[in-house]
Length: 447
Image (tube, rainbow, N blue to C red; front, side, top):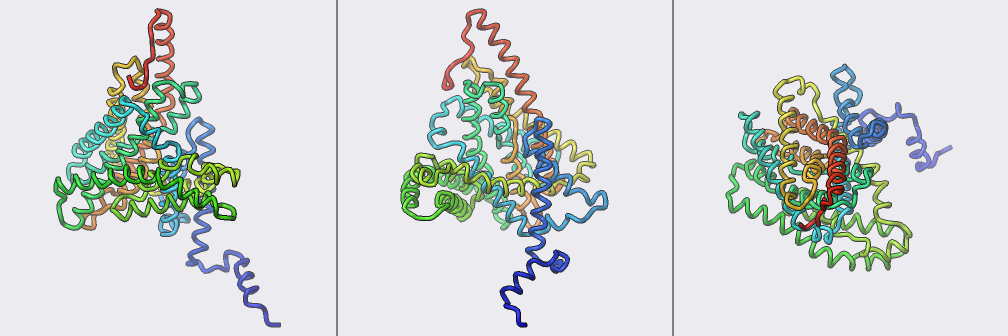
């Protein structure tokens, strides 16, 4: 009997994995994904059981899996060596920044007020300067590009943890919470602009040319023009795009249209020399539920609900892969431990300095500064971009420096919840005493 070739192909796919050639690309990718997702969920579960965000568990479990060769276990080394897994991790970063952007809108940015703007600007300038200084002090033999990049890695703020603590304590609508959340949005925008400028300087150095002050100003201008141009034009075009999409028949139109919008802006950002995550973040900021209300009603689903399964798949891949690139052996070197400790100190002090922007408004400036401390996922994305930047064949961020940055991210994430709970509890006590004395303890966000 002659078997139908299509049936033969199906039967071949159903054979045990041992029959699949070891070098088969698809087999390695699906095995890597199985390991990553299982590890991510187990790590996330442990983290949440001890009161920490799941992302921290995903990162830690990635560190553990990536350093198993130190114990003689080399079975999982193929994961970080697989280019497809690397692409999926980068795609996870894009989806993550798109989600972060969806949590705010352009109107939210316009309403944050002068105090949030002051907090955000100080929260970028001070950590950048401190990070640069720490790099110059502890890594004097490394290039100035390394110092600049370390400063850039400290600028980002991830307030997901802060927002959760504020919500748990019933303070999510307080003036301090509004300043923190508003400043974090601007922080991300300014941090991405700083990252674009530093990456452009490094790229110019890699070609053997120096970027003049005029050229640097052009990069800043280009990044700002893209962000604010995309936000301005996107707010006009987005409702028309989704209005057209609402006339398309079939399922999944809302999700597909949103991803087309996200990926197009990510590509445009890359095309003009910016990181794709800048475009993805801008896309999230632009989209508002009013733009796709008709399409959402038609499908009876919200965009955030549709994005969440994709995020649940790709974002853990990013965090586990980032963790796997941490070299624990490097932390045996005292200078790297010292660098991680110094970066963490600079990260904390830098965000405390940003709280000076909240002085004079009867606000709990200490809680505002503590709430801005976590670097989280955005800091990891910055560090990951640094791994890809080279000058004349030499990586700007080597494995040891990258490991120090990841330790800084983990420590700032760990210390914020207890520190913020203590600070807000202290503020509540002070507020009660002040209220007993007939004093006003809060003021308007804008002062």
